[in-house]
Amino acid sequence: MAKRLIRHPAVQGMLARLVAFYLRLVWATTRWTLVGEDHARPFAGGPMILAFWHERLPLAALGWRLLGRRVPQGGRRAQVLISRHRDGRLIAAAVRPFGIDVVHASSSKGGAAGLRGLARILSGGGVAVITPDGPRGPARVAAPGVAQLAALTGVPVLPCAVASTRMRLARSWDRMRFPLPFGRGFAVVGAPVVVARDQAAEALPRIAAALTAACETADRLATVGGGEPPPNHLPSVVTEKVEGGSGGEVPFSPRPSP
Image (cartoon, rainbow, N blue to C red):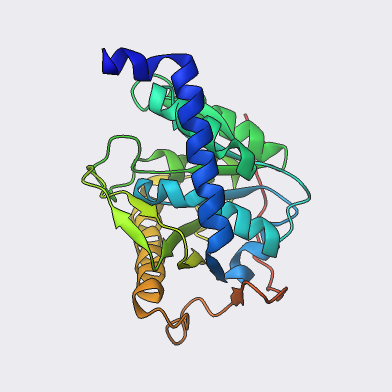
């Protein structure tokens, strides 16, 4: 009975509104710091692939909002690949107020179609967001789709992670991180990973390592709490009250979508 009730569209809509309200509360009561802004800035006017591990899904919407504030995106919205499962639909409704739309797909049935959809978005200069180990894991083991997308489109992958000084770990397969209000948040953007057209398989371990490194950096900042990045690592830091920074160019030539 309870499961049927939760599946009801009206209940799903209510839950999505509650999640969105909670995320807005976390956003408003957290002091945010962006690390690695220079890595994202060269992509502000063109196609962008953002990747993060599934464990950071509840924090991803907040990270995108922060990135959009520090590196203006011209009003464009991110497009994230999410399962067609009802949980995916709930997440889609919850993150919509944060400038994120959804490309629905399934790792078993619709993954290829979802990647083609993201490729079309990138060919139009959009932002594609992907969780390489979602939706079922194993945790921090990247499926080939993210590297294939980068190889197909010629757009480098920006490895991302978000952490907070106040968050809880779920007992899920990926130990999903849930942020709490009144903390300090750290969003990390790593150096872009360029994938040659015929080297998707070779690039996949580099992408996975970069994603894990971004998580470790964000977690270390949140654990230390002082907000200072490790020496010689992701040097561009923008805090809540600081605007700007400029970055160097990252050469790449987006390939036309097939």
